[in-house]
Length: 149
Length: 126
Image 1 (cartoon, rainbow over the protein chains, first blue to last red):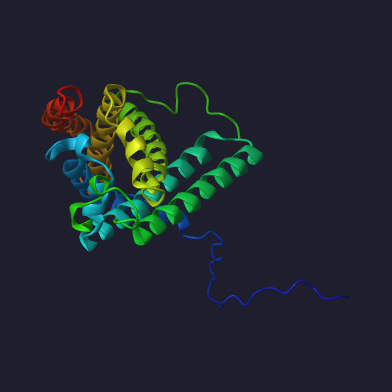
Image 2: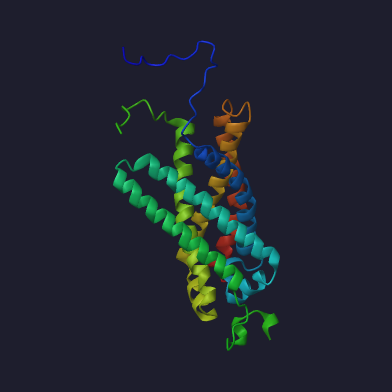
């Protein structure tokens, strides 16, 4: 007689198969709700200050940006808005790709394009906020913030 | 992946249409965000380059576009709060329809505050 298959001891406690799935989608779901609330405050504040106060959209120019980013408050505000907005938007579009793109290759390429856009714009935006020069050498005084001269 | 048979998955009415509007406005806002990061990045090129591009945002056609963008953002924001309430508030699913009408009401009030002022900026010279 060759070896018979081993039968588990009846008194052994039942071992649940460990799930091979990660909690990524759960964390994504929670993130969409958490970031959504923060983004509501950040973006409504952004729209109020840039489009409602004073001359609204007509007041926006290089000097306006220079004046805003002279303050760490608006730097942090815009940085948070950039990162949370890009993550929230990228995860939303990822969900839509998963829902509608059925062919595996199409899904893959759409996601590669999406993640490339995410990395490129988020890195670019972050660099712009931190390396911004409000008073570039040789710039005409009427184009830059008043504190430059 | 087999497609769902017709008439079972999409139930219409407030629930489905708010979901559709949430997706459409979300995609719209995301693509604007990409463009907006790129145009803002022009501050690293030169004051002249940034002013030239941001100047196009102050034209009547773009001004109307901004009104549409703000409308999309306001709906997405308020409906997002509704989704959170449906998920976390015990009575959320029961009141999801009423809450959509609250969202629409808040949307109208917010746009009534924003639109006249913005259109005045765009079309009123200043």
